[in-house]
Each structure stands twice: as C-alpha cells, then as structure tokens.
Amino acid sequence: MIKDRSPKELMKAALPLIYLIIALFALRWTVVEPYVVPTGSMEPTLKTGDRLYALAGGPPARPGMVRVAEGGRSIEVEVWELPASELGSFVAGIPAPLGLGKLELADGCRETGFICEPCGLEGATDISEFGGWRAYLASR
Image: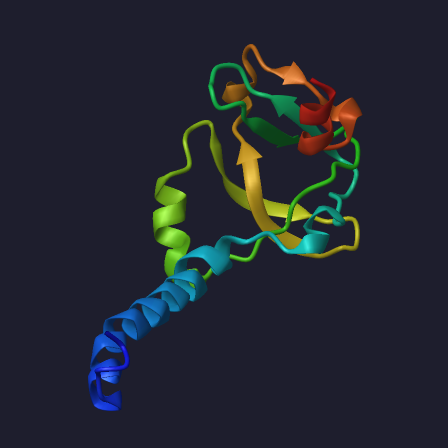
C-alpha cells in the first residue's frame, strides 16, 4: 500500500506518469496547437475580384477560389498560421486542381492561400453569393 512505501519509492513509481504528462504536453505544443485556427480567423476578407466555387466530386466537399477580371466579389477567408517546418508535408497533401498562391486581402495584405486552377471548375457550382465557404456550408 501507499503508506508502506518510502517517499523515494513513491517518486520512482510516479516517474512514468510524470514522463507521460510531459510527453502529452509536448505533443500538444508541437502537433495540435500549430494547426488551431485563431478565434478571429474568419474576419479577413479578400479584396473584391475573386469567385468562389464548390468543386465537383468529393467527398469531402472542397472550395475553389479563382481570380477574375470582372464580376468578382469579396470573399470571407480563414487565416491560419502554419510552421515553416510543416509546409512541405502540407503542400504534398494538396490535391489537384487546388494549389497555393498569393491572395490579396481587403486590407491590402498579401497572404499565401488556396487557389484553384481554371480546369477544376468543370462541373463546379459558383457559390460566390454566399460570401464565403462556411456560409455556403451553413446554407446546405
């Protein structure tokens, strides 16, 4: 029983539990938290000049953003922070016709974001009037 053990024995018995707790916190800080979307992530919007499409195929349902010369609108976007060390594995998982490119936000900042090749619009539905992907999903 616990009363029969010395403090040294109790510490020795508790050491694996302490190591487990440290490992779980390390996992949280290095794997989980870098991918958490900040609370205000839905505030930025793209500068007017883009169209948003629900791409054909799936699941999962996928959005496609395309810059247009005319008829574009401001689209609400999510801004994520991704550690540079994770960029390669992230890019490797992006399926065609999606890719990464520079997007201009309404405040003039340019951020790297998802874009869609024009060939990916075959069979896609223009959902620009919803103003963003999450608004479109909420309407379904």
